[in-house]
Amino acid sequence: MISGIHRPAAVHVDLEAIQQNVKNEMTHLQPGQKLWAVVKANGYGHGAVQVARAAQAAGASGFCVALLDEGIELRRAGITAPILVLGIIPPEQAATAVAFDLAIPVGSLDWLQQVQPELQAAQSRLKIHLAIDSGMGRIGFSEDKAVLAADAFLQQHPEFEVEGLFTHFATADSDDLTYFDYQVTRFKHLRDLFTVKPKYVHVANTATSLFNRRVSSDLVRFGIGMYGLNPSSAPHSPELQPKITLKPALRLTSELSFVKQIHAGYGVGYGATHVAKQDEWIGTVPVGYADGWQRGMQGFKVKVGETYCPIVGRVCMDQFMVKLPKQFAAGTKVELISSDPTAPNSLKAVADYLGTIHYEVACLLTDRLPRLYD
Image (cartoon, rainbow, N blue to C red; front, side):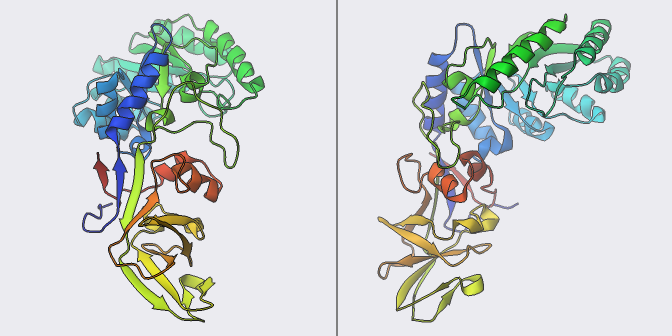
């Protein structure tokens, strides 16, 4: 997708905020722990390469991505630190992972058996992290028998470099630790069945670290916190307070592209879901759901100049309309998302309005919006 560089709309990313969040987390790490920055999904919408460079300068010693292609992007950008791909890849793509020095997760003996002959023939080694499904229900070994079989296979095949062993917690951001404790117990049981010795055993994500969940982890996979966002952020619910200060790094801005007065009975937008009861000033903003500004934002207030104005009519693919208190000049600045976490148009406020989480809102901001780095 091409970026709209000739349109007055952009995502602004404060790289100093990214670095400060990483530095704050570095002071919170347990002795000997390392921080691997999670930059999947284009750095949660912030820009993967730029965020990775900022995070590395602040102390991150490795990176996590979701896709093989995301890891390749970092390598081609000159990043040489360890990179873990968190998603399962097809066996036939193992050679690509080797070529770009990317570690990948493994969760079944069958996958190992399919890949081993090719690695042996090429006289190459593949870095792997053994995934344990301790209760997320996503990827990984979950049965004793499967663990023991994979362990025996790995003992016989040096083509695999077991760099890591890990799991992911489903409820580390909750104040109810019942399921978290269950996962810890299950993880420890399955981990102890392996006799292969990985370089890193890692279970800590942002929430596990920020809320001081007591569990041993060689790495912290620092994701949403790096972007200054609280991982405990269910819609319209109280947030757990993290143990470090978080500074949001993202703003979304545009401006009024057109301003007009409409009269009583005039409709606005598809379906005419807003009909004027009297003369009204309407401003048009050149951002829409093709940019990730969702249709459900109808009724939300964005900041036009210094005034918060409601979105009226349905959000269109490329534009939306706001009701103005008076005539504003075309070109007036519009702030759709504020980096101030207390603002009524913060990323969490947007997410709450949509009934979702701020992760999703940030990740859905498309590449059509240029990223500008402060």
